[in-house]
Amino acid sequence: MIQTGYILTRRLDVFWFLALPFLAAGVALASQQWLNGVALVTIGLWVTVPHHFASWLRTFGIPEERRQWGDRLYVGPLLIFLSCIAGLKWAPITTAMTIILWDHQHSIMQQHGFARIYDFRGRTGAPSTGRFDLILGWVLFCNMLLTSPLFMPVLVRELYRFRIEITPDIVRLIATVSWTITAVYAVIYTAHVIWSIRRGYQINPIKYLFIACSYFMWYFCAWQASNVLVFGVAHRIMHGAQYTVIVYWYLRRQTQDHKSKSRFAAMLVRPGNVIAFVLMGLIYAGAFHTLSGGPIGAFIFGWVDFPGIYKAIPSLGLSALTPSEGYAIVAQGLIEAFALTHYYFDSFIWKVSDRRIQGGLA
Amino acid sequence: MTGSRSATMRMLRRLALGGCVMVSAYGYISGWPAWLLVVILLLIPFLSFSVWMFTGRLRRYRFLFGIYLVAGFVGSYEAWQYQRIPESLTSSLDMNSGPGEPDLFLEHDLPSVLYELYPERSEVLFIRAFQMKLCQEDRRAWQQNSVCEQFHDTDLSTIREYFERALRNKSKTDENLYFHYVEILMRLDAPQSEIDAAAREWKRLFPLSERPDPRTAFANLRPDKTSAERVEQRN
Image (cartoon, rainbow over all chains, first blue to last red; front, side, top):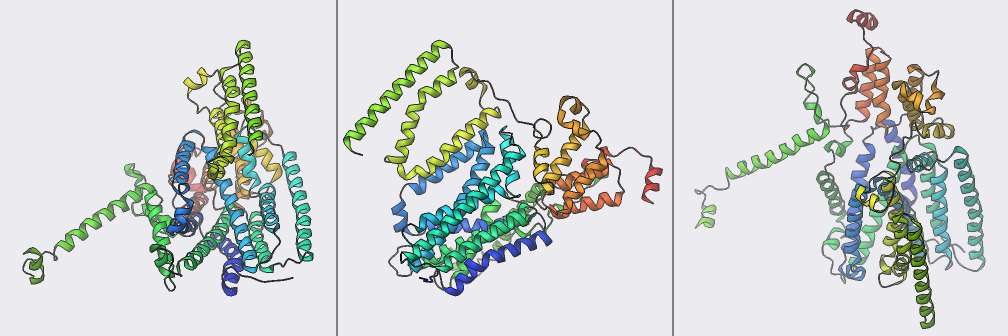
């Protein structure tokens, strides 16, 4: 009846898939207590952006899979970039809502994907289990969006921005209907699990534990946190870290048999090379943030106050530097530092009197 | 798809297209606006294209197509409502140029709706206080918007209370709350130490903000006082 199976190993699963949601919620609550408003940006920078790097590596890292997916890997991003640019010009609210809602859909699907892997690894579940799990994810997540005090005000505000005047009674009605659907589906889902067992299919308890931990974290943050910072930090840590971990292990398993022609991905995920993998993600994040003009202070929770070096002089009518002006100074400093490095190296690498250098000049 | 079913579908499509053309012709004679005629004429080709995207040779893109289909509809409505469609296009299609951006504070009273639902959330308390502030700032708002009538007895001290209730939740993502709290304190001519503490808290929580120091930004909002009165208040 019960067959346990793990995505990685028992110990790693306990940490990355069962304990991490609680750890992420703890970090988020600590951020709320002790960090400033930049925490969300900084966590996004060091966790979310590296997980995008993992996604690039996963998608383009293995030539055999790259060929399998074909033109979707090139046409898709091109269409997305073009529609984002057009959207920002003509329909920025819709573009922002599309990004947010797609992000939610992506979160549901990631947890659903892990649930499927649990069944795959444990050889558990009936053929219909995947569909029931998927609907469970959608019902639970949508219920959270439609009933929680964190998300519902945002939804109401956006509807008002489209001149759809939703009254408090309608909001309450939506919440009642949503909770009713959730309760009914919980009964159906449980009945399906019982039916599966009676039909002789085995179940993987780790999968159910994983689903419970993930949704507990989301629900806890959506109800107990007073603002979006807690949910944002906890969600980004759980989502980003779990994704990066599965990419690392997937690529490692796919490239370790030496059949794959992938050199770069194989090098990064080689046993003992995990630091290189993490480092590449962080370098990617740093480069992405810098090139997209993000404030330098965001790298370390805004603790370094670059504009602060030039204080305002009210008597002369001079105001303090804004962060972007401070960034310009730092960028200028970097350029000058590179120039100075060039001057310094040239002061000793071109000594014609050096016998070794003469070899290159002869 | 079997041959007979495919033929039936083709015939149905042609019939629907013919129906749309006839309705458009009737609409043209009756003087329907051009945009409506265009929508009716494009309806069947667009539906056929959508079905083809989901079932045809490019069905591998159906997920992307589905997302942008919905986003395209909503985005078109947004572009029209926010008057972002070029005027030359709207006039040639006999469309009005859209109602423009809604005023959520004075026209639609969003803060009251949210306040009734979530009276303790900081962002709700803040927009409620901000709405009061808008009514306070501009007396014409009272005449033009019935929304402001509910704040007959509201003064700056009440607005300050709302701000401070919101601040108790320690929201760290709403810079406006901290920034405008300094403004309210300055309008109330609060002691300088309180204003400085509020400005320091704003700077501490939002060190990367591009805004000027609120004490400078709202300096002209402080009630006029002689320097002697200020020294007396400080003491």
